[in-house]
Image (cartoon, rainbow, N blue to C red; front, side, top):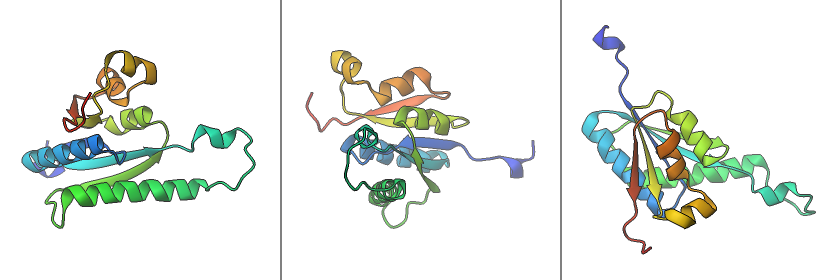
Length: 152
């Protein structure tokens, strides 16, 4: 294989605007800087289910939801990267369930990084967990960055 054709490794990180996802983004950014990988920050967004149940009110359009999602992602990346990240960061805001969006984004990636609020066991089973799903189903290695600032 010609070295000039080598595509750099790609690290995918899930970003949802929470403190745990911010820690995951910061960790992934450091890892990308160390390895020379490209960083793909992915934010999944969905129209809340209640909006489809016949409620009579003025609702934001899909474009407004998408715009808000892009703002969340952009703020998180700006906060993590600062003025000069030194890393190629691709930002993707994608409509869909977070676990499915991350599985699709992780295809061909060298690593998937997600945050965790530390809810395991019964709570994780009861409400579901994107990070738990990713660990079980991702097509690449997964790093779960736990936010130790939050108490269980």
